[in-house]
Length: 348
Ligand SMILES: *Cc1c(COP(=O)(O)O)cnc(C)c1O
Ligand code: SF4
Image 1 (spheres, protein in one colour):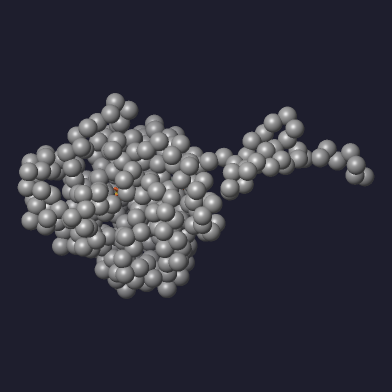
Image 2 (image 1 turned 180 degrees about the horizontal axis):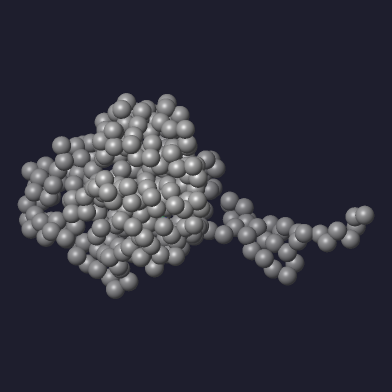
């Protein structure tokens, strides 16, 4: 079952006096929570890190001047409906704009939801043609919305169509379903992902408590089918901007056979300022994580440059250069010299 704005007071997730504000927010941005997510929330905790991600609040009306409807410039890079082509070798394919839950910090919050719906047959065919006609497209990133909301039969058709394009070598799904609606990861869905080409799945998770037993079982079904698994997380104030929380999240993911891929600095989406910290704090957290945890637990901290200029790493830099050569810092913060490359005068 999906909870909407009006279900939140009876569920004990919103105080009755806040309902008006929540209804106003719901007119502007999508609202949905799954049963699995509701079960993880402690209604007695005003700072609950799960509630903070999904329960709407009137602070979403606070918009800063630097915030934008399309913070990473996707619309300008969309040559045909359902495709975003920013980097030469890969495209986004968005077969649906519907999500099982609506994250309050979502960077696409003004594009997604029932209003945008599902890409029709004709539009999907046009998107496939766009991919077929461009031999430089090596990878197709299937995102949305959440592509795992499509019926397994439709996912299977999509995988078959994309895998049949000779120059496409990799199909990558970005999804929150295994975490927020794990029962949808059925045997039929797993089977639909089978292809001759590499199919990767990137799961979105931000807090260790999201990794419930059912979520872990869903991820295990994908892993058992031989699907390489990665994760992406968003660095969110009051949710996971803490080294111990990030450490626990990434350790748990790695133990579930999921390699942490990206930690995103939040985009400048409207009404999401309460989630954004400073990049300097993110860098400090990444340093701390390097000191605490296995290399497998280290995602790349990235920023999607506003205006559609793409994602780049913005993590701490351990290396400096001076007249005498390199100075490199160890994880504990001590600096060490590393010599410049020899000119080879001493060799034959
Ligand atoms: C994020 C993104 C990708 C994928 O980027 P990777 O760095 O390869 O994960 C591709 N296209 C667009 C438009 C994106 O925003
Ligand atoms: S699942 Fe992804 S696309 Fe959907 S609301 Fe959350 S962040 Fe946005």
